[in-house]
Length: 333
Image: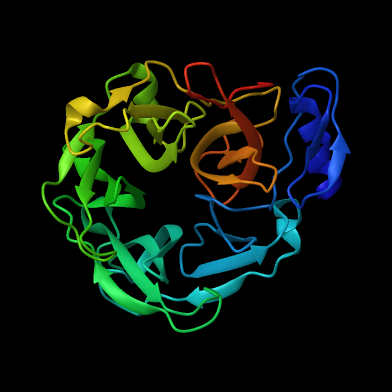
């Protein structure tokens, strides 16, 4: 695995010496060229990575459980044993379709946010975001306590959390009529939402409406080197090869609870690439390596028309920032 990843690291950077994901120095290639990416695992829809004290914690959608893998080297994620930390109850509102878990360290404790549905009514009208809490220093150990369902105004999926300027925010993808929008709300505690809950973005471009659905989902927070704030999101239906990443941005001094503070890019920022061997890329996260390099993790299919199945695998890719302080994900595509 490490050999494969190092191969395409060399394909993305100019000549020089960098530190790879576990701190090892390697020589880089002379040119930026496209080279097929290699997945970290055979399967891993909706991948998520967080870091603490030099350890990367990885999770993804498994449907009937939440597992964590931990490693000090993301290129060797496949060698990390998955540890099941939670299983859903036999019945109730979070008994089925356990999707898109995210692990966050907040206020001295670990929290898992995940989407769930009722086994008796496993449909979009019954999907919500739930929270688990664990006070162990190691999230693969200790006891996960059910903190319940977040009281969102709409049914929805794919919740994420971020802090900015001393305030905490929750963003999720809400089912609003025949489309899915992004909703933001303040968070007084890691398991409660405040008011207002504000719709900040709706599908408006054709590339957000492929596969027969109008969808913005899987929001993820990223702060740039100039302080500007970004939310990536996945657009269109996940079963379409046109599934892609979009981008919202806001100024660091803006009121994030005002829709006018958020500005949407007119074009997707990461799309299918036959040259890289990835199709329908989406549902991403971000992490940073010890050398300061920024990375994006996302799921994608390894071939065209593979739809929205467990064949979606996690990939990682370095990215950089342009002169305007915006992230650039498409290098080498």
